[in-house]
Length: 387
Image (cartoon, rainbow, N blue to C red):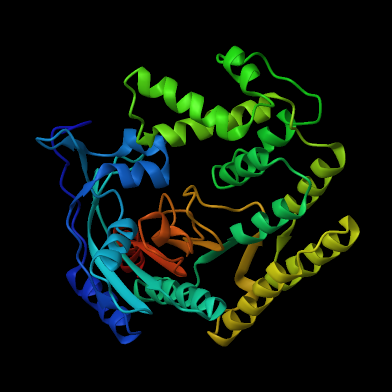
């Protein structure tokens, strides 16, 4: 198994607290699933990017297919919902070990979570999931965690409203969750060049070419070279990346006005109501229509209030995203205000495209959360000791 022969054991957590957490989830109508630990690796690489490879425990079956110990539970649960053809809407929970290298502790740790699939009332579903995350923290003795809120859907709506090349729009959306937008906004100013690409000749030849013909040419060249996949990406996906890069290299950068709008948008933060007012003011000033996305945002804020979430405790930021590119709407994290946990205690968001990317015939609305039970358990132990 790579990168290590075996995953180390996870530290113990409190069975009574875990049982209480599962009981809380069950009371909210979420049925427990326990998907297999061994999973196909390609789905994680396709959905989370090649960067996750170095954090996965990998092996190969007798037919040469890459397998992995599940690095999270959202994707395995989603695959089960599809394969088992669960009736929608479906509300499922989980609790069990996951395996990945990280900056803290063991490569094996326990994770709990919730996934809600198929609800059409997305704003209410979002609010319920965040409220259940708060309930999980309260169960472990932290009734008022720090709430960080963002919205990938709002940023996507802004990009759609701006005069951007499709390749640049995809690039900015992908980098939104990776925290690389500041670098992109500086590098992609109109007329600004940064060095010469290692594939400059190929990219120059593709620039301006018929997209279908260029895609067919790249696909043929890769096939002739005997290349079927690279880093979990298929030949067609590699061809698409070449075409995107050729568009960027051809000078499809940001105008000064577009960069100013993006910079102003990404500087907005505060309570949801305050941020909404500022985003609507920006849309008016920039003469762009964000009303549909902002109406969703405001309706979700109303449902958060209905679920007894104190809006004064919610720190919304337009620049806040999470590093998984299947998120499509609300994203959030709950943190220890004292910063003793080493990372989020609960995190999640909306991912309406996940099931279709995993093979579902239609787009299925989805929202969920993951709970780092060991971080919460450690805080609970520390609080007990302080008492």
